[in-house]
Image 1 (cartoon, rainbow, N blue to C red):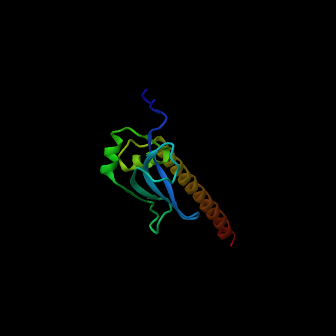
Image 2 (image 1 turned 45 degrees about the vertical axis):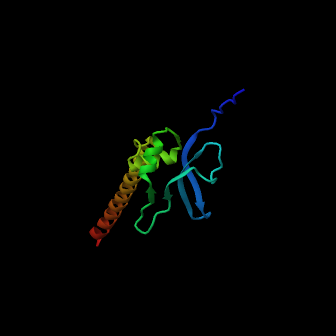
Image 3 (image 1 turned 90 degrees about the vertical axis):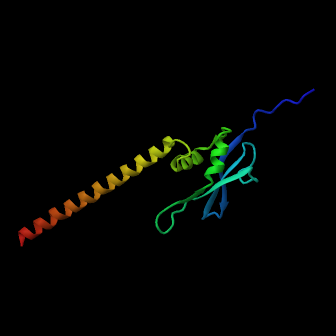
Length: 133
C-alpha cells in the first residue's frame, strides 16, 4: 500500500537568528515549515543586519539568482522576509512597508511641528523682553 503524502510540510523563506543577545544577525534561508528556527537550512538566500551602521544603514545581502529560482516553486514567505524581499525588488512591496514609512513621516512631521512651536514660543518670549528694556 502506498504511503500517504504529508501535505502539512512545505517550503518557507524565513529569517534564522544568529549572533548574540544584544547583537542580532539574521540569515535569510529556505527551509521546511516544521524545522526549528536555526536548523540547517535547505539553502541560504542572504543575510540581514538589523542594527544600523555608522551611516545609519541596515545592511542586507541577497543571492538574487537563487531567490528568483526558488520563488518559481512558490514557497510561503514570512512577513519580515517578504518586507525585505519587497524592498529589494524581488516581490511587490509589502503593505507593512508602506505602513512603516507612513508612520515614520508622521513622527517626523509631528517632531518638526513641535520644534517650530517651541521656537516660536521662545521668539515671542524674547521679543517681549527686548521691548521692556
